[in-house]
Amino acid sequence: MPVSAGTSVTGQSPGNRPDAVISVSEAREAILAAMPAFDIETIPVGSAGGRVLRQAVVAERDQPPFDRVMMDGIAIAFGDFAAGKRRFPVQSTQAAGDEQQVLEPGKCIEIMTGASLPRGADCVVPVERITVAGGDARLEDGYVAEANQFIHPRGSDHGLGAELLAAGKRISPMDIAIIHSAGLTDIDVSRSPTIRTISTGNELVPAGAPIEPHQVRMSNGPAVVALLRQHGYTDCEHDHLVDEPQLLEERIAAHLAAADVLVLSGGVSMGKADYVPQVLGKLGVDVVFHKISQRPGKPMWFGMGPQGQAVFALPGNPVSTLVCARQYVLPALARSAGEPDPLPEFAALAQDVSFNPSLTCFLPARLVSGTGGQVLAMPVATNTSGDFTALSATDGCVELPLEESQFPAGTVLQLHRWSMRA
Image (cartoon, rainbow, N blue to C red; front, side, top):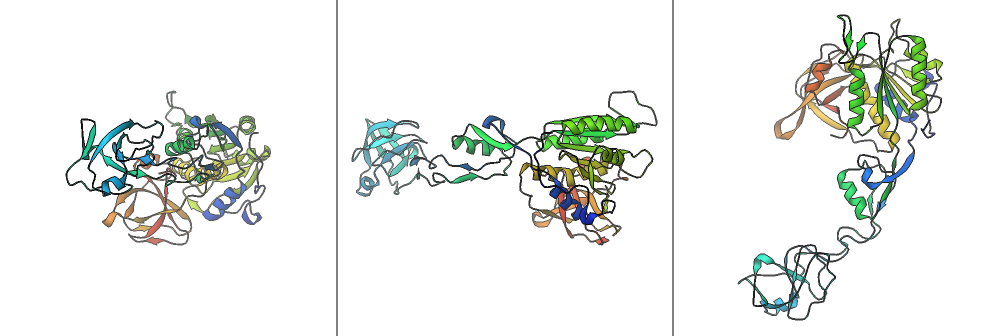
């Protein structure tokens, strides 16, 4: 098993109540406390996009490493301009990448953007403000120059040894540029976890296969895999298992041996064919909790395997599966990869909402702009937690707190976008 050891909460839920229905906040805390840290690996920088940085990146030298010319034109000594000189013999030309030249008194050097400022020069006059003829560059009438204009001073962006990127940053294309600027060819990142997604249920039929009237198309597993891949977790595979205890035990055991994380969909409620919790127990997966006081997704189960595997068993209703994957699986993976917890995001309700106060509700919503650019959440009704088609029109969910029932338009609520990196 490639998971590194870490502090975990196994065999119990908060307060040693594995069978109790726990709150949303307790569930979050229990999962994050149990998750092990993913190992560190060193990879080429060219392959590091989207991975989580596990080292600091420091400046190899000053940036810019020299006084950098910012405009095509001529480099002059400002003292010559201040003394009234407006015509300058062209001494030479210096392009970006050329060795730094030395400016002779009273002359100019034709200079290109990105070049090192010649020694003795402290002013750049743009090419649009000069005329070159007969070996001389003449400034346009009335042009007023200033000392140090169009010069990007050495070290003004950052100095040698400055920290450019901190550990925990998910590497963006801009970060790749920064890492290359630091002279690094290899970088330490979190190892990409091996994730196995498992759909359970006799009624499920994959797309393309013949289907009977009493069966349904398999959609949860592929959707969860797509959500994971959208967030940079590429080592994901999907399997479908029918509700047969011996088969479940054999196949889940194989997946436990191969993966860091299991994400199951279905088989965790109270039905006679909901075998997943007992099968996981037989395989040595310790339950941390089973059931959260939320809608949708109350029957969710979470546990830790004997080698530190994280096991998320999500309810089988499609909306429940996707909400729980977003609310619990993605933040847990981010924590294990070393990412800092994201800042909370909020939106105001666009209309009144009423809800049963006995559960926390994750209400699907699409975002619209309000007065002054305020972000508003427009609730999108789902026809039970099986109505996943309505989710396509949403941007995420707003969280309606437990023990409140009336939420007037304008109420500010925490927003959970489907993409944690929106």
